[in-house]
Length: 188
Length: 134
Length: 145
Image 1 (cartoon, rainbow over the protein chains, first blue to last red):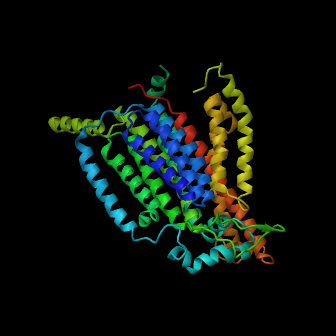
Image 2: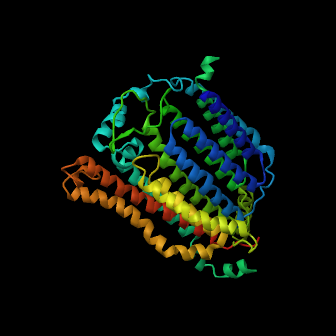
Image 3: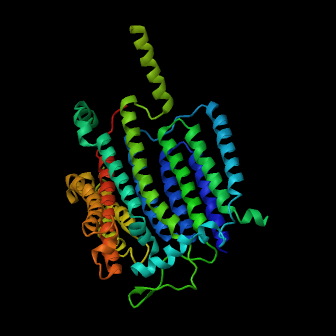
């Protein structure tokens, strides 16, 4: 039953991705990316990753869509017709990459199996049993994120901070003051 | 057939990767390229989460008793580590996408176009003018 | 950016929803130990309340709620809170970010406090960066082609 829901959600994701690749109206594409993220969040819930689903729903369906729409509002919302000369090579490269991937992925252990290296590694015991004894915190994802992999998360926070500062440098008030004629142009 | 059924998330991952890669390469529109990248990214997220999934498992959140989390060996959990990695990757992903979009906005202000071809063509024109002048 | 005055439904629904979203963001932030949630999700949810407010009532109204100047201070503050927790454990004689040192008699309690502090740092940085991103994109004037 779970597999049927999973397969249909994944099929919907693929159809949405195809529509994203085909459509030329970028506003529609931005809304479809929101839908794509929401479907991904549903799949993550079914795959037991509730924290990830939460993040994907908040970030993908909310934040990313707003950012794409804001960019389209600042630029233009219609994609020009791309000449077809790139389509064939792109399809060849994407197709061969996909073929290699499917060949490689078929070497992975079966989906959901318990005897995979991921689940048999001793660290799994440490994360799922010892961490609860050590911290009394039920959500092991939080324990791992903030305590066991604290260095990693510190790095991620610094990356987010840096990205925010870069956007401010590119689009912020300081960047605009150097081009005084732009304010006048924006008003008319 | 049962072989294929056991691998369906991975096949979906490969198809989504292909669509994302195709969008990045075949389109000249810069916003479309970034959207293709985020589709590609989602496929990678999906693959990591699929690897952590275990049949009959549940979300890695332990039950509580008297205000303390307790270990119950009878409960099967999916692996929490991929969840941690992907959780942070999603938020970092939106931050880097924002940097890309900011660059697109600046490119549009300089070239009056968000098409890669137009920008390259106008660069070429400037180069030719400089060559003629020099 | 602001909607026309006749968008009564949107305005009233936004007024009702924005505080609820903020409270939910705080719940996700501080309940992350016990259920799904944590700093990353809470930051984005909290920011989305302000973004919703800005989309409906205009950028200036949103800037009045949280001035960008404050956000530019809060974003590094979150990183500093995170790294500061690590330095605190260093000063208490343990490794960087090993929270056991915060309460050596009860290591589990120390872990609890440490994780709360660190998640709060994550939440502050993520929320302020997300709001700054929105203000940066929405505040930029469109250039006429």
